Amino acid sequence: MKAVTVHADDGIALHVGVLGDGSDVLVLSGGPGCVNYLENDDLVPRGARAWFPEPRGVGRSGGAAHDLARAVADLEAIRTDVGVDSWTVLGHSFGSDLAVRYALDHPARVRAVVGIAGHGLHKDRTWSAIYSALRHTEDEFVIDWQPDVHEALNASFIEWIHEPALYRRLADTRVPMTFLAAGEDIRPDWPLRQLAALVPRGDFRELTGVPHNFWSTHPSTWTQTVSDLCRTAPAADR
Image: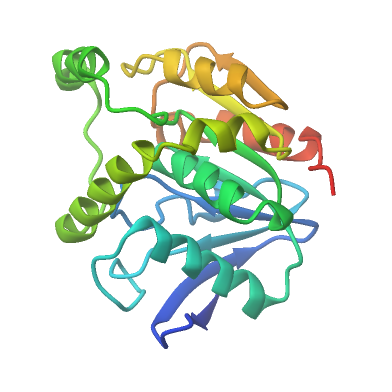
């Protein structure tokens, strides 16, 4: 895995891993506030040049706690600096939700969204109750993260999903969005089904027999799945 350092518009240095050759894919991991745990040679989508940004304030990137607008601005700074005109955005967990926000804010720069095991754009008590009741059954993963970054992005996410025009923007977007649910995920998948039904070029799929973090438990399945999804994702209308 090679890496580049990109400076955001406010001068903060951002770490970005890069590997592969082919169509450009931006890979966003979950959290929020986690290092990019998908930055691994064995997890790179085949046939793609994949970019793995580390969020500001986390891991090898500078900076501190920030909101979603700042996170999106950092992704745009990376795209501009490395000379990519547009890319497919692949996100896992919170990375899927961030990919949707990025696509709404910069539709001309996102060819397609591929969201894997995302949360969905909601703050629902029944969803949270199911997740909390089953959380003890999930395998524990030790992933570096920053609590202050997590809290700031989570607060910003809640503000965003309360915006009056959000669902209008989703219903109007021309960016294709594919949402994949992990069949053994303890997180209910109805928010992903709703998103896929709302977005004009939305698609919902389910991968049976794998948990939320199947990038770790089933790495070969992860690589095959994301390779296929990125390769076959339709391009946005221009």
